[in-house]
Every structure is written in C-alpha cells, then in structure tokens.
Image 1 (spheres, rainbow, N blue to C red):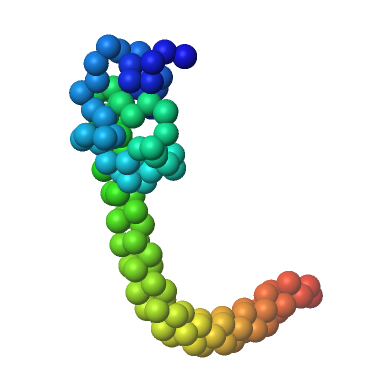
Image 2: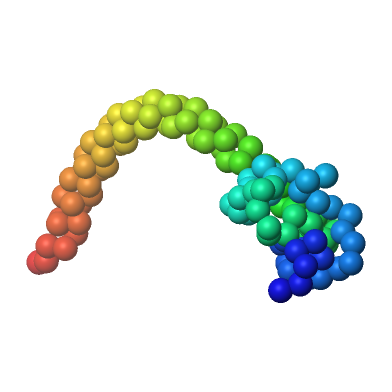
Amino acid sequence: MANSDKVCRACLNTKDTFEYNFRVNVCHELYLFCTSVKVSLNDNLPKSICSTCYKLLNSYAEFKKTCIQSNQKLISLYEDKQRDTVEIEVKVKKESLDEVDDIQDNLSSFDDGTKDRNEPRY
Ligand SMILES: [Zn+2]
C-alpha cells in the first residue's frame, strides 16, 4: 500500500498532493453522516480526500439532507391527513349506508318488474 498521505480515503486513488484532508478542511462528522465510515484522526489510515470524492461527499450530503427533510415534511403532512381522513371516512360510511338502503329498495321493485315480464303470458 502506498504512503497513506498519497491515497484518497474514499476511492483509494493515489496522488502526490491532496487539496482536502480530514485534519484540515474536511468534516469527519459529515463523512460519517454520508458514508457511515468513522474516520479517526489518530490512526495511520489515509486522511486525504481527492477533489472528485470531496465533490461527491458534498453533493451526497445535500441530497441526504433533502431526503431527510422531505421525509419529515411528508410524515407530518400524512399525520395531518390521516386525522382528516378518519373524519371523512366516518361521514362517507354513513352516507353509503343510506345509499345501500336506496339501492335495495330499487332492486326489490326492479325484481318485481322483471318477474312480471318473464312470466309467460297466454
Ligand atoms: Zn477519491
């Protein structure tokens, strides 16, 4: 393995110098947030990040934050809706029960009509 100062921690590409380093300008908490990889500053593993991975890290951090915020919004909206829906359902159920009564009335009169019509007439 090459000198850990010359290896990108994320993609393992090698470079002589890196612009980004966990000791200097990369937040290891952000890296943990995005990758679930815990970077310790006290071990011998690479602390550098190449510019490509740094960009990916930031894009992904934004994406993940957006997803989390959207999800929280959706959950709170859904909870509000669920409360409304319960009230609406109760209303609808009562109405559809009345409707079923009407339909049954219509059906019985319809049945009588058909019976008469189907009976052979001499
Ligand atoms: Zn990289």
